[in-house]
Image 1 (tube, rainbow, N blue to C red):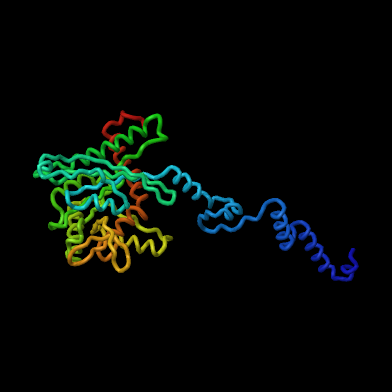
Image 2: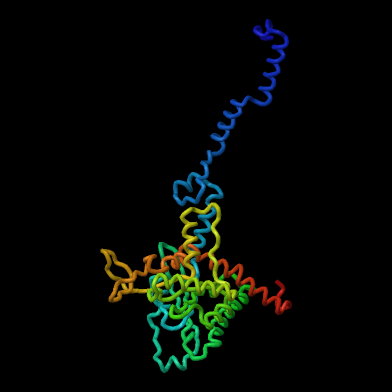
Length: 361
């Protein structure tokens, strides 16, 4: 027996012996922490704390291995594969559709286009033309296809002028469905229309019958984004009144247009503010121009008039910047996602309901 404990009270000695046995069996808190630290140093390197986001630096990837690197893998595969976006523009001739598309993507898609004269326009019917261009920006490749509908709204009787566009949308949906149920599904070309910019004339009192018929025929098949063309021909008050009139008639005829998704709670304040501005801007009052002029020691794209200059990218002059942000910077993937998981699925379900024995899916 320990000489120190021989003179102690028997009860204290028993307590001390009990504490010694407990310490030997389970280890004290301090010794346990030292053992853990020692084991980590010997067997595996200490893993740094997650930075809470995806970091693409070489130093970070060498020090940290975990599921936080999964977004990097997805991004690399997506960038290597490239992106596809199919945009349809519909509207009467002379509303600036071609100019606006060139202004949006800083390219010239209509170099070989021939403008028909008056006699050709009388006999012209609605046709479908496609222009494709590859846009590369900092290693990201986007294949942009613009589908135009020349002749739309130019005839005296435009009662069925929307049928060509509906026929084209259905054909591309059916092609994708046929390829999807085929044997080789790895390299399916997506030619489905992801977005339709419908141009509304500013010279009127809201929507025309042709506008209502077209949007009602395609609102279940494609994402429709209404655009008020040539906003520089209206005063700010007239623009606000025209927008309110268009929205009221869209609600009256129960036309479904593309709705900007709601923000999540964890989104940044700036993104929430941009989303709110986008919702307030619909329908977008836009101006297009490919002319670059000098203004206040700045080179800007604008339209020059005898009474002044209208800047295309000036938010106080038009909604061009909001439209470009929605199509390219913030909601292009939402348009593609809605086309695939909502509009295309509805089309596929309708096909199965019409002929349930066609395929066993």
